[in-house]
Image: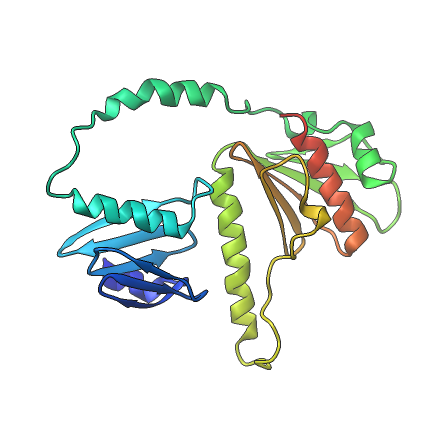
Length: 240
């Protein structure tokens, strides 16, 4: 399993007993024989022939925190704590009840709210397209902007999109002038501040996540269109 992960890992580029050096230069240490990072958010630690996997993609936890959790688990493989997993079911059910309920994506932003956010009049009422809501401008060459909503697993999707963007940038950078930076998500600025926990821009999509709900808006080109996408996402996020 570790050999397989070693062939596909993209965040870790060096490993040794008890140490894992990440591509960003940081270093993780623990009591493992070998460790790997898989995709954006999964830490795997091997001791002897037993492995512990910690997947933090569904949270805001860091790889450093995942490594500490894996290290603690490795130490207890031979003497696990007397934990009854069933005891957590009631708390999980109670937490699920607090999460935003799934609904029609067009119910989040009305036609009037969308026109205010986009700075234009709409040609028609918003149109539902599966998990998306399409808002079509009455102005020529402006076209439509889609608001997408993922009601579950928003944290995982948010993190994976960012990791994929960085990887794609590295691929495009191969063979290019090494003095040029690789493609990265748009740097944090006032456009990423809003009624959410985190936001980012990847290619032509604006992403924001809150309470494990991911809301996206795109496609667009240019700063003004990016502002419109941000305003549309903010209008939707303010509803929960």
